[in-house]
Length: 250
Image (cartoon, rainbow, N blue to C red):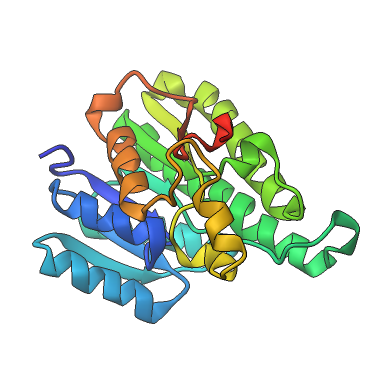
């Protein structure tokens, strides 16, 4: 099994890509802590993991509160003795708006979850990994953080920041054998794109890439599995794009 004896945290593990990763990892021998702000969905992921024959516990976490992220890491170490893989996946989107119309509170909230939450996850996971002499960190960005996206200025800025901090952190901690990478999904069939599920927009989104379909969370989870595993032992500071060719255009 590719993740046997690996101790893993997944933030935003209650749904979407986080849940898909948890289920994929459960078949590869991982011991996990599923973190989410939503109690019901987080516990449901744990139930599904256990039903799948895997091992996981839930820890309620608001990634915008640094003390809660620190407690998350501490509990993981208390339960499992260490932390091998940190997946900073929790994220939100914003209402479509031109930048001068974006409410300041919404800008701050998106950046707080999508960028600051990634920083907190790395800040508290890295000291544990330094003691181990190894570790893998996976940060969830987006193709919007690479190419930009109109009407999503806050989200785009935060996701672009994730890519930048991934690179700088990889440079800082490579000497400790800590690998730091990002994934950049395209449009994936999760709740984060629920507002686009209408007769006008969904067909356009479904054909906006080379493969001409919407991606599935399980397809992103497979990319996370590679980066989490020892198969990616010489991969750090990169952003793995999982977008069906969105960046190529039609």
